[in-house]
Image 1 (cartoon, rainbow, N blue to C red):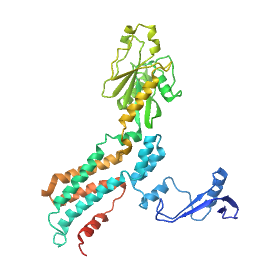
Image 2: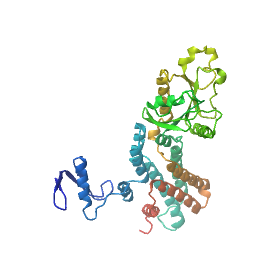
Image 3: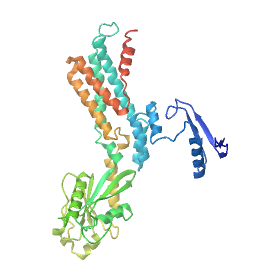
Image 4: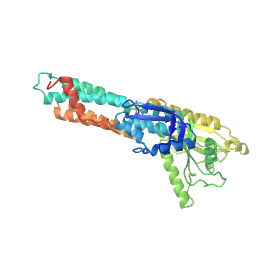
Length: 404
């Protein structure tokens, strides 16, 4: 069809217009899509003409997906999945975000919430409608059995070692070690660009420098830190403090040493629970010094790599090892349910309420049991954004036909 300016009917473009009636649209509302030619002048002219129509305005940031949520076409976890899909930098992040946007978390959570509502209905029916002939006795046992099943499902989701969150945020590899060992050169080699200043002068790196890598589809942030030694001034002291802080927070530490240095000049790798690999750099200089006089064997670690930033020797093996480590660490994360701290917090809150209910058991006050289940269902409802106080009454009246 031909698009025309509403002011003077000037032809703007030959386009395709699609009418999409609600509620079966992305937002649940009536929609029109205009497929125009992609030139900047064409798009600009069409947008300007559309905005001149009374009652039409540009959408606000995030308004499209917000309308979908408000109209029940998407839950909060799906909305977060869309945001993560937009921000995804690696294949594994894309796969995880797409599953979340398609309801990977919402499906199980809504099933758990409905199961809790049904258990609450059994308990509430025994409390409020015990005189009704449609309500049988002995409802607590079946209700608790259903609640225990939900608790096992939540426990399985929480026992994922935070893989989903770690995949979304990316793993952190800290390059650390004494000054002038080749840390910044290693960062530049990994980034394949001059991300850090390289100088033979010790203490060149004062601040933390970070680059983001895609290793076989997995996100890894590599951090170059200041050389760890007794600081010479206040600026270097702050750099060392930041370096140690990043080392403590890293998932993997690459401790870079000068392989050609005398043993007494080689700093030992920190042992603080972090996974640490030793990178024995400058192996091209070992020939200048007898091997038994070098620091090559001075540092012990689970894994040691021999490298030369000058010749590139050993770098391929190191990169392959880091990529394999990332894949192993995040293996299965794409299929995990929890991708944000908010998800884990809500499930943890629900699990705590369920545990209180189960501790009461069939001997506890039914009112307290029902209240704990209500709190658990509410926590699950906050996770997806679907909280409706009418749901419980709907279940009660549907199941037992009270007041029919």
